[in-house]
Length: 251
Image 1 (cartoon, rainbow, N blue to C red):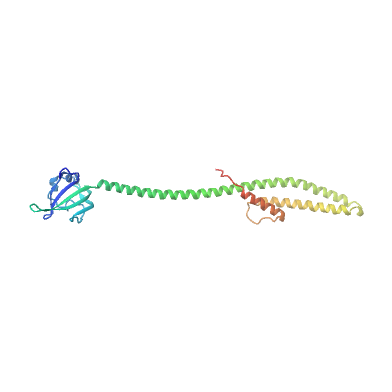
Image 2: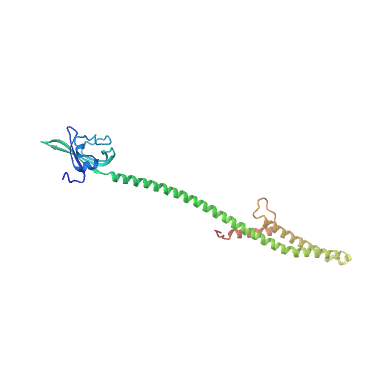
């Protein structure tokens, strides 16, 4: 049973502190001949100074191989007292080097995974910030495009309004010249009507020009032109309607 055990077993004389017996697993574990192990002390085959003389189990004990490379074992210590043979200590060493390497690899992979996860979160946050910035710019561009289109529409409407207003003013001037040549007793009502028509034409022209200026300055910095109250209210309503129009991401 001593020789057939899967664990490395060796016995130390408590008086001399030397190994007096060892199975073949000790030779395999330490990469030494059994003859080299017999007669050594525990300190001779230990890779580190550690108190392991008391009964019990010791984890992560580093033993010294023949090539001076450490091998880690779980060491079980048991005291054996024989009346005839003397006082001995039995050591059972179970190799845990592979498990230790796997644990270290697992810790290293976990650390790498944690670092990668942190990098991924940082990249996601940066991507999200870039996406938000892009969405804001797209909304601004879409709104500028809408306002530019409205400005062009208003300018076109104003052009079509200015033509009849100009014709009305020209006709009014011609009529005023002809009425001025009439006798005073025939001009009373005509003068009042022509004056009213002239004021109305001038008011229409002024309002149209104000709308054109306002449409051109919707995206420009600086003071905004003053509009008549009724037109200012209309443009304010139009601007709010434009702001409420949903825009589609052009990408």
